[in-house]
Image 1 (spheres, rainbow, N blue to C red):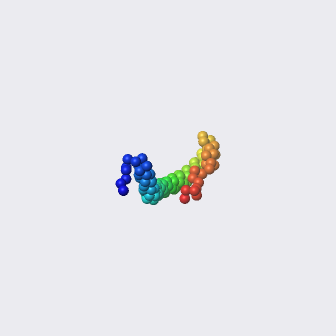
Image 2 (image 1 turned 90 degrees about the vertical axis):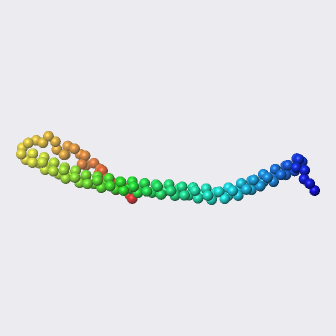
Length: 121
């Protein structure tokens, strides 16, 4: 028995078989590739999270450093303010009127520059 490949029905059957084979192979390839895609996506997400974690740690360290410097400056400012008040008192005791007194400036009554925040620790 010979097959007439010019027969339209035979061509349709061959096309259907070829198409189904292509679809099946395509689905198998997609299934095989999907784990690779998932793995690549997971690896990429993990790298991004690692980089973000490193940057967060760097920023936490920097914030801690800045808070420490602000605390030091605040202590220094308080010492200077106490000294200025002593000098104002000396000027007043000598019978002179100081041009400026720290009480005229209420900036020392403002909220402290550094507040410890638990959200970044």
